[in-house]
Image (cartoon, rainbow, N blue to C red; front, side, top):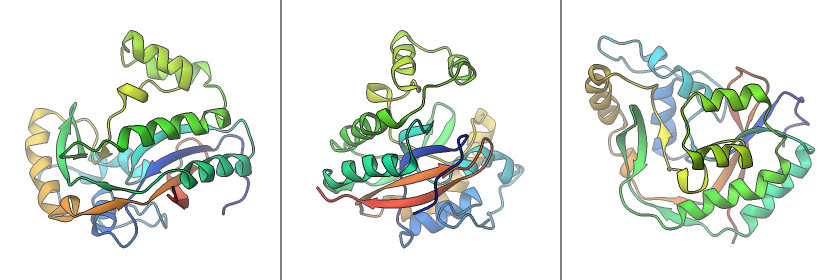
Length: 231
C-alpha cells in the first residue's frame, strides 16, 4: 500500500489486465509505458506517424478501462482504500468477452465483442461506492468537461458525479490512441490490430479492480493496488 497522497493527487478505479496476461505486455508496449512499474517500454514503428504522439494521452493514463473516473480525495487514503476493498469483497468475478480494436468516436479502443451483463453493474457500483470519497469538482474541471457540448443527461451526471460519462452514458473501452483523422485511422487501426494479435480475444476473467493514482496534475497514473473480487 502506498503512503498518504498529496492533496493534489487523484485516484481512479480501473480494470487492467493482470501482469501475466499477454494483453498487459503488448498493450503496455503499444502505449510505451507499463502502469504497473511506471517503466517506459519501447514502442513499435508506426508508418508515417509519430506513435509517441498518437498514444501520448493514453500513455499517461496507462492501459485500462475506466470504472470510477479520476477524482481528488475528500477523505483519507485509508478510507478510500477501505471503500474500494469493501466493494471488491462483495463483487463476484466474471468472464470478459473477447475484445477487439474498434473505432470509438474517432479514438481507437479495445471493446467487448459480445454482451457482458456484469460489466455495467460493476462500473455503476464503482462510481457509487467511491462517490463519498470524492472531493467536489472545481469550476475549471467542470468547464473543461462542458467544452464537449454535453447532453442534458450528461450535464446532470457531471453535476452529480463530476464526470458526464458514467451510468447509462458509460461504455467499456481501453483507449489506444488520441482522436484520429480518417486518414490516420486507416494507418493506425491495422497496425495496432496486427501488433496486439490474438491477445485481445483471449479468454480472461475480471478477477480484480485496480486503484490507480496520479501524484499531481500531468503526472502519469500508476497502479497502486489490485483488489481481488471476492463476492
